[in-house]
Image (cartoon, rainbow, N blue to C red; front, top):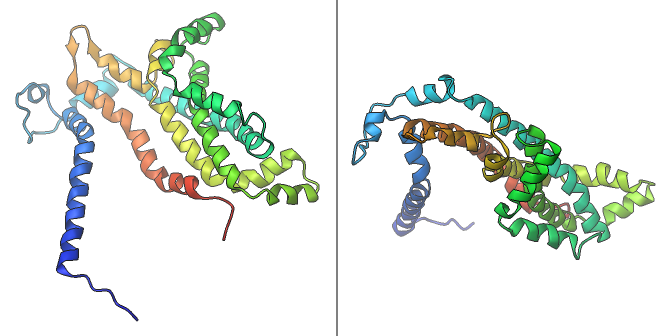
Length: 281
């Protein structure tokens, strides 16, 4: 039996790798850390130049954001949860059968998939005016339904690409075996393909929810009071009299917590969903 020994040089290299990793992670997350730290500073400390590294933390900005009554920030969080959940579920419900039709039967493979993907690559601001006018005409402005439809539309292209890539790795023998057993196309899709697709389904749901949660442009344009998402609500502390930096930082911190926690929880599922298939060696 061969036993590998770790010498001093290997240990030094390992330590240097972790040091570099820590420095890079710190630099990348510095804006987030600065925002979180600002949310716990008093207004006097925030206005101090240069900003001190050590300070006595306070919760006054969180109290202002959640309990002052000037804004309905808990309602904005609820709106984002509803919009994110509804948009991600609708995106999966639309893109999953479409991906099966593309991957298994070639329906729209040469035009539908490239069209949907290319539409998503265009700047979303291009669609702002037409969608606003359409929503105004049919009464979907400032509604959960309108925002869920927009969130689903934004999420569908990525979901479709991921589902098609996954289903192309599934062996066609599964469909043929189902047909031999007398299963219809619907049975094959929902009773055979769907259970095997749970890893990618979970991954797409998480990614779509995070995408919907982070949507800002259409939330700003299409909502005013009833369906305002948290990304837009966090900007309400920027007033004509000035920027309430502490309250804004607290609102941003509260706004990033759900997707951050969800991302940490979903990371292993996302990795598994992206790499797994039904073909086993």
